[in-house]
Structures are given as structure tokens and as C-alpha cells.
Image (cartoon, rainbow, N blue to C red; front, top):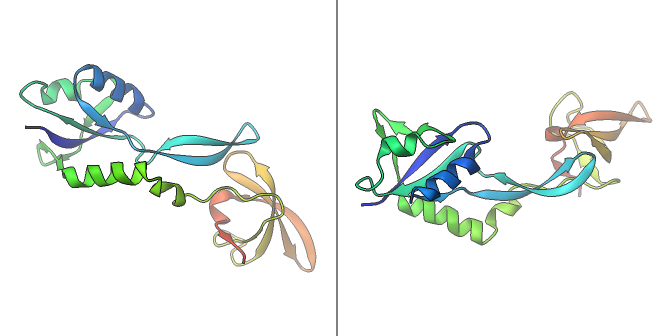
Amino acid sequence: MKDWYLLYCKRSEQERAVINLDRQGAECYYPQVVVEKIVRGKRCECYEPLFPSYVFVTFDPEYLSFTTVRSTRGVADFIRQGALPQIVSEELVYNLMLNEENHSYEHMFESLPKQGDKLILEQGKFKGLDAIYQEADGEKRSFMLINLLGKQVKVSIENTDLVKNKA
């Protein structure tokens, strides 16, 4: 009987694991979402894993052994409960698949602000201040204009600190 299991994969090797498991006759599910990022100074939409380093897999243990699956290139091990691989509910996996098909995850990740967008900084040393988005400063930071002592100052802030659009 086929059950769903969760595999922990080696860093950045989920796709290799999926390809190799498919070749062995296992069915894999590797949920991905589209996110907007800045790569080499330009905005682009990229696919990223919904659960980094994890892949759902289903197979019949009579035809494909746990040892074979665990030894597949890219796979680190099963997620276990005690000594046995943890079975994942079929309903959970199918709900994840349905949500991915309906693009339900796209609303989880806000797109990057555009130049001139007004934001409120919710974290970090400038918490609570209003800011105006200027431009990206690499992949993880952005330049903002903030009002300090009546003067606009350009500062570089972590992207995780600027999450709320000002209405």
C-alpha cells in the first residue's frame, strides 16, 4: 500500500532527489511558489520551494525499499517518529497540491515595493518610522528615505524590516 512520507534533502538538492526518485518509480511532490526577487540588480520572478529542503514522496514499500529511497542521490533521510519514517496524511498532501494549483500561495509573499512607495518600518532600529522606498541594495537590503530631525536621510535597511504598505 502506498503512503506519503516526508524526506529531508541535502541542501539545494531537492530537484536532484525528485528526478532520481521519479526514475525509481516513486511519486514526488515538491511544492514551489513564485516570488519576486532582485537578482543582479534586476527584479525577476523566481520559483522557490514552499518548504526548503523537504520533498513529499509516495511509494509502495513492497516494490521500492525505504533503504533505496533514503540512499537516493540528494536525499538525506526520512522525517521520522522514533525509528520509523513518519507517514504524512494523504489529505494534507492533496490539500497542498490543490492550493498550489489554485495559486493560493502567491498571496503569502508580498512583492517588492516600487520606487516612491510609502512604507512603515516594523522592525529594526528604525521601527515605527515612515519611509519612502528608493531602490534595492543587493538581494537582502533596500535603500529608503526616512525623515530624521526634519531632514530626509537615505539609509540601507533589511528587506524584512519593511513589510507594511502605508495606506
